[in-house]
Amino acid sequence: MSQVAALYIVPTPIGNLNDISQRALDILQQVDLIACEDTRHTAKLLSHYQINTSTWALHDHNEQYKSEQLVKRLLDGQSVALVSDAGTPLISDPGYHLVNSCRDAGIQVIAIPGPCAAITALSAAGLPTDRFAFEGFLPAKEKARLDKITYLKDEPRTLIFYESPRRLLDSVAALVQVLGDDRQIVVAREITKTFETIHSLPAAQMLAWLQADSNRSRGEIVLMVAGYRSTSEDELSANVLRTLTLLCTELPLKKAAALTAEIHDSKKNALYKYGLEAGL
Image 1 (tube, helix red, strand yellow):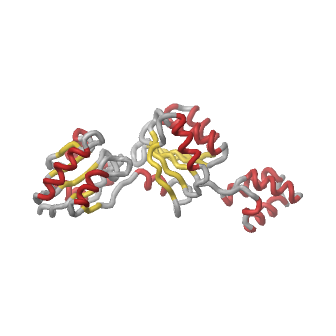
Image 2 (spheres, helix red, strand yellow):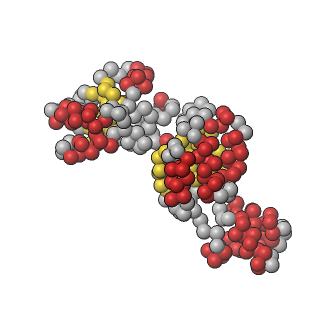
Image 3 (cartoon, helix red, strand yellow):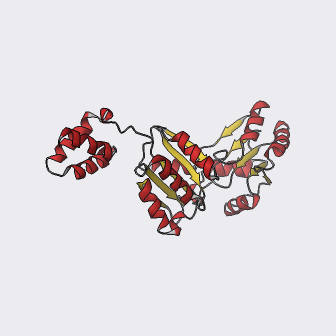
């Protein structure tokens, strides 16, 4: 059974080949053509599942030109699947021009749910998930990277970035420089793969942890940063202050502030300052 003439956005595994859905496999088997970021990379997935559909390279350098040709094929009644090397197409991967061209031409675009490194990592990071912002890759050049982080400094949502192994240390160092030592950072690497790790630390400690072992920067990386939270004592909730006050009856203020900050995800410096002024 062939697929109807449409562009299918098909997510592929980010590591574990078993993470592809049956619906995705059916579409890849039945479409007339698969547009892929790297035909050699996609060939490994297709070979694993014994899929013989023709492939066509569609990447950053040829997307606008190839999109015109693919739109013509689609208008002629062919069906096309779009895949990237891993995860959901268009999420920091090629595909925007093709999808936009298809929609302008009145061609149906059908998105298939599936793997996405950013969402998979966020779900296990231990950071707030009710509001988050995906920012793709930070700029490669130092000034642009610092400018970008400065622009996001007061963003209250959890921030999600993709990062390369060779730039991870520079990016975390920039986060420390702009956001300070205490902003919580989570580094998730090799998600769904054999050496998957998800590590969470305050920014300065994360930088030191990464510097201690180069293996901790290897692989595909999702870098997540806790959103900005005000440290003013006026915004410390009554519940947080109640916890601090109770702990101070048994512990020194510095220890009580640290424990309260950990329990409520608050800033220990603001709690310590409040405790000093309140005579706790």
